[in-house]
Length: 256
View (cartoon, rainbow, N blue to C red):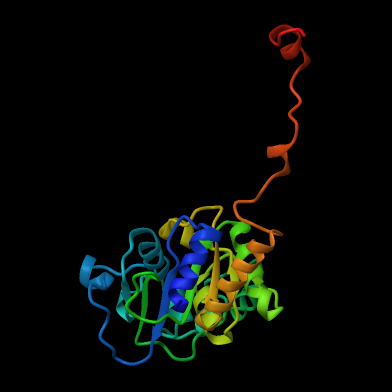
């Protein structure tokens, strides 16, 4: 079975996310976008945030193409290499809204992974229908689902999956950080993604480099088959003997 089919089958069967896994590709040269792809400026007449594009892919099945002009978020434009980063790294955006001191603001921004070179475009699509091979696949889910994916990743690698958030600019984590370091990451989305991307309060992002798709899918299945961890989570109380109020039995049950 091909990697794509294996990953999608096992994620659907054992993880059961509410939205489609999203294929992400960073395009470095001038390539023709997939047929039917939507560019925000060309389609709507205005730019969108990249997290809106991710949401459009996973919730609406759209293939999105983000070039420089399609990005509405200035911090994301800095993180992705399209704008100078001097003011960002100086903490001028983070302070005072996200930091109480200039030192803290600079430290927050320095922790982001910034692309040194801007891609010609970023392509986003549901992984199932993506007409391209991804660099990263994003799976949105709750903490139990993220844990199951982490177990799948660890099954063959023996490595844990770090969780990372600065409370903002999540795209710099689930795109930049994962692409540059080639390590999976569980990202807690920031407020902007919730406001603009409609990401729900219980959702995390499990971001996985493409090279780990097959082994993670096989690992998820193996852990499930072993019976140690499954999703949905099995609760012992479901098969425990119920204890109801005594008068239910006294007045309602027939006397033997």
